[in-house]
Image (cartoon, rainbow, N blue to C red):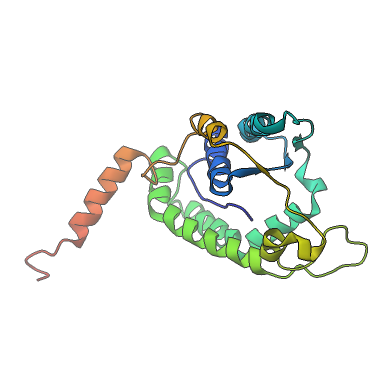
Length: 212
């Protein structure tokens, strides 16, 4: 698992590309090939991947491919893992709010959920990603993929019969791509709602004459 984040949107191509480019810059390299589903949120990543590969050697054929996720056994296994270890809890909690008429789906309701829960979910997702990266993938009969801990297979692939497919990219190309990305802002929700919520929290936490 390279990155896993919670945010107010999961379908803005420029936001998704921002996560991608952050990892590319950290490693100063891009994968030899990226496989994504057919969602429009991946379009910008595809364009950047082709540009990054072209900037080094012009070999861009098949460096970005698309396909249905249900044909990718490993990603389907990951979604089941995420739901079991994290997502189902939050799905149940939010459903309870809806069933008890405490969440209507209005703009304000959504922003309040983001204000109160987004940072908590983000921290939990980092723990889930670590759990996934360090769990053991058991060897199975007729399996094509290797077995072992994902973090070790990624870091030292030669010990598992693989090799590093990271392709070096120039800093100039990285900077060009970053300018086309939309970075996460400092607010977990709408800026006005965030400011009002912070003001209310400060007022509630400020001791009064009766509580001193």
